[in-house]
Image: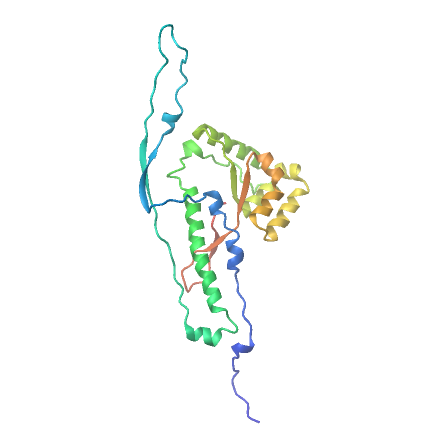
Length: 260
């Protein structure tokens, strides 16, 4: 009987797989927990801003003098403004491709997932960039350096580093820091230091199991309740999202969205 001299590709009898899970990656995004959104009614507007010096006055003598009056004062305010920007992306889905490959590749479903991920990864990127903007968070006021990297397990002291950061924020703006934001790499290095391993003991293994199992941020936060008390924060957010920095058509170049 006759036989072809080349192999015939039968896509309809094959299978498909994705080298990366968009759904799992989006579950790792923490941006909206770091900087929660503020709903506004207008696309752009001015609003009053009351500065610190108008709210927190110098300590003064508040006693009333004999036959006198109380010390009087007033406050001022300035103005600021905002302007929102519209964001969006598009995916092209060809009906012929859906008809031809729809049984083995969920073209429309993948396109929908790509759309959502493209928007959310941009939002995550923008929030991370805002948090690490040295033009806003100046070194003298609100930031402090880590002298010994946490990857140096024997010499690093994450507790002292975070205590110093707490003090820097307190002295810089008068408010208490309530959230620790770290990448999974930094989080792992932190709990593997001798300083913290001695305090966490077996809990450290449970933390890593929870992270590696892909559990969501709420579940991880429940497990690290003791660590939050130790570090004096209400929340520990572990950024595990990745981005591709390579242009289309080139080999992917993966990197973390959040800085270590």
